[in-house]
Image (cartoon, rainbow, N blue to C red; front, top):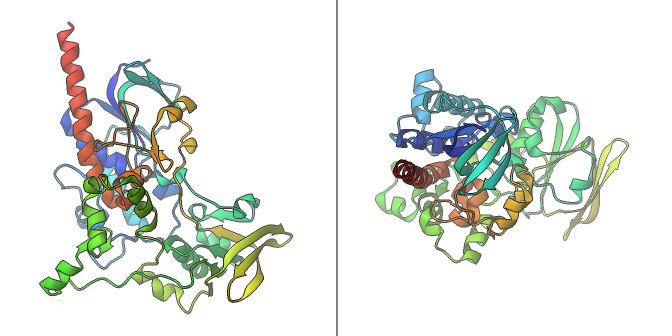
Length: 409
């Protein structure tokens, strides 16, 4: 086993990289593991745009110097803080630049096990190495938590994909595809498939498609800006609260937190996507999925509708754009004994104001703590709060350990 480090960070997406950028100047000895921007590289479709505005798509560093604005200016890429969608390839390149500049010691290997061992943790790597860490931060991305409900989950993989698996829309050119879902992922996946030559239709339970409004004017009167402020997750007083005050959100009653984390900022398409969908792609609204069966030519779906009764649809492939649900059992590097010891909120880790779980020294950041800190944790915008809350706690513990080690000599 190698020497003990103060912190091991598991994951190198926006939350993990932001935390490392804050931890590095704090003097704590840490190691970080994982391919940079992994879910963005491997679980997003080519041609995608971020739904977040440019100003809300920054990773976080202590001085605020390594913003998306700075990267786009440096690399001569189009950028606007508001009103211009951010292309996926730009965001991936930005994350890689951020890592190269601020976290050069990032190790692109996977963690295979995290095991409590006395006052520290044993962290095993895919390389075969085992190290000791006084504290561990789990910065797991959404790629672990793709949710496919029944009856779609029982279909063979050959005829069914989750939207995170549709990374090459061009591969479906010339095929008939049904997209199940009603949010941004469903609508943008359908648009990309259509634009790459697939014959697509969308099926959703909601009675109508929800679209976000167009960007608000920057020169609105003051009273309008007060009544409907613009924030990282959108406009409106509620959205402003979720965006800017996750620390206050944490003090809401648990039942309220869980409900709002699940229902606020629900399925809706971005305003810039609307022209690519309306009039271009047939959308069947108000239809619930009753059955799904593999067929010789692909898949057959049975649908129920209060207005139309029962009907069937057939296609060569079905895409489940059905979102993500945190399930700790999918974090294979956390053993059964660790998961059994974790206090949970709605199946997610219960954490304190410093994001520390019920297992001392084990922290969680990102979408896995949305029921504690709110819907902002599902977005890049939440990385700043997480990094600024977690880094001081980790550094303080590292400092106490250093003092204790010096006193024992």
